[in-house]
Length: 114
Length: 114
Image 1 (cartoon, helix red, strand yellow):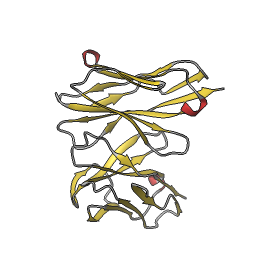
Image 2 (cartoon, one colour):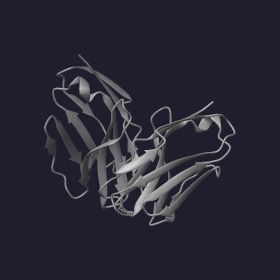
Image 3 (cartoon, one colour):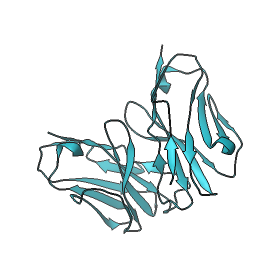
Image 4 (cartoon, chains in turn blue, orange):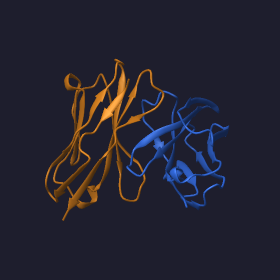
């Protein structure tokens, strides 16, 4: 069983569309994250949820909206996609909001906006 | 502010050479955690090691070793007798006591040629 699973793995879409990426973890962790990795491989936090509650919301366009229906799921919805949104998006989870044990990452979703 | 600097953007070595990846961090926290992750060409992020700020012992795991020096705020990673399979982007990351997420360096791309 995959610990942190993201779907889809690849997503190609046109500018202006709305898309969602789903993430699920079966580790019993309380905290989940979305990171964006740009073309230069830089990993930047976008959002963090602890037990369904938003705790980190970095400077991200409000076209990006995370949703956590329960602590095992954290989805990312993106409205009006732009070319600059093309990136790899990683979901991750940690035992709690103080990730002294680090993260377990999903395998990433490569989003390409054309 | 918390910061992780990986000054080496790319390193290229020939198989069997030893290579050291540098990581320098900044934090005002007295309790913090340092990590290394590996991102092979397949794209997933693989946890390698975690070290807390109170444990300055060096660690060795097979061909991998880590040197943590608080005096220079460095947490360097050495691969001995490198192999082609070591080719990847390596990320150093920091979690400080007051920070709810991992701060990543920009990564070092290691290419090991046969």
